[in-house]
Image (cartoon, rainbow, N blue to C red; front, side):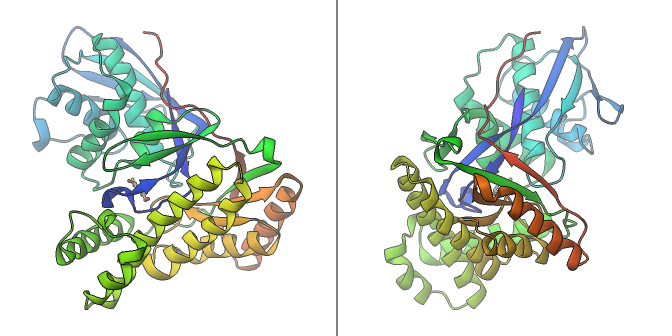
Length: 361
Ligand code: GAF
């Protein structure tokens, strides 16, 4: 069983070797399985009732498509890693909202990995799984994502946010007790149609890598806010300058947020979240009117901070609110969506949940 995630702060920093601070959702994907005597896999989604069957005889030249690609990708990557994955009949059940930028695909990958490792009787430590799941997504599914989602789904601990250094993969479980501070995190699923997500994501990543090349660093992580003016002065392209500014300042905002949480000052995360949103809106250019509206209205109604979470171009907004303000913020956002003619959002409150847990065979 592996959860989806929300990212408290640190967006598009993971593939720049930077810092992220996600926490696991209480919502998770459960994959259960039994061994089959042959090397074939039969996967049923409880939600859709659909069953997909595959063997991997064709390797990467005959890929499985659709949602089952994430399952096939994990079988593939485990075999690449030398795990003797048995054929299996698998059943998937999930309450992670799909296509909302809450990492339903990473939850499926990590839950599949948990059950297949279990069925294989293999010893694959949790800390080694995120890289493998990321490779499955990059090389089999073909999405050039970073490591945040798979790390969050695997390594998060209940009641904590996961401070992850995406270069060294060093982690710190940072206590994040919202209730003790009288706070809530309200999630607004904007329901905005995700358009051009894959192409735009890849373009942002390419721009960062190109900028790092021009600046002579391994990754944008190697530039800090003190070095930002010099770095920007070396770049001719205004769009590239804005992309770099987002990544460098976002890394600093993660560090500042971690410091605030360590000091027990959860409210201090609010302005950092809002600054992160503004940076994604103005410099990284990955927001859409629905999420900008949700953020603006949440702030107008007393949220300490609000930001889009995830890859962008739709998806969800997080608002950090005092418990007693939560209903009013939610109502105001719904009202604003109605006034603007947007599809009604889904709204729900989240608390930091638990990462991958093994299930019995
Ligand atoms: C998506 C990706 F999968 C992550 O790796 C990360 O880059 C995120 O977008 C943006 O922070 O969720």
